[in-house]
Length: 316
Image (cartoon, rainbow, N blue to C red; front, side, top):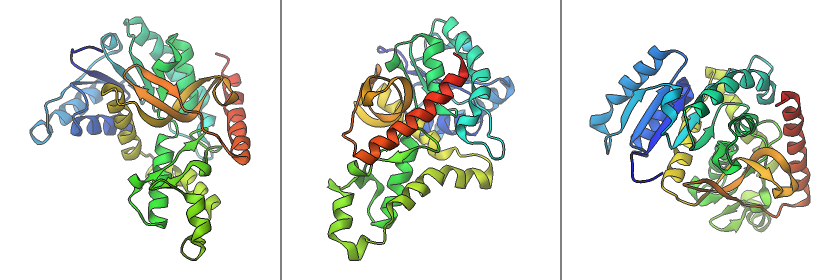
């Protein structure tokens, strides 16, 4: 990534891909956005519609349809193509369909000469990120997923309503799978720098009604609350993608909970799940290892086991 135009390719322009492009455009994050779809007319129409925003945004962004062969000079390829869960399915149940979609896709992108960063959003995002890493042959730091970034944001939003404070004054992370086995690391959640566990203990009259297990459940189910009513979620995850992309292109060194390939961190090897990582122009510069409580360590091990079992079923 030099002084040339900052180019982002988005593969899959359904609700998530289109929302991501809209967020990138409105926040003037990159110079070029290329849309790739299995239906070329859709990519063309979305690009044309988005181009009509130019008079109303801060800077000009070139947006156009493209193909896998055009990914060669992209800084980041964002992967949004995926199947919808069937009734009763959880995210990990979609592993086989995700593999069918991504195996030929990654092969074609790499054949273009692409050497940038992959950012995955398609579910099950932890498995997709792992698959992309294996299929691409890129260093682990160059392959990441949205992971529990959106879950961490949902947690902060929920806590801001209980306390009440601005969500941006809440610091903390949801760890593990972006799915059923995720959990908030309560021992590291702070409000304006003060641990939430201390706040509840010191002010039982004001905050004793807060049930952390219930808040964790609300956080986990937040996406399904939306999905079960309208059939998809897209604004939150689209903005999460834009947030991560901006952190990469601007070399922010911001710490974000993303799907990351572990190589000894948290005692896990050859595995991908949501953990805090320092995000830079080269991808994940370093994984931040939190000192977890005993219960949180157990939850992390359980979530790791769920993902590891799903990876074994893929036969990569």
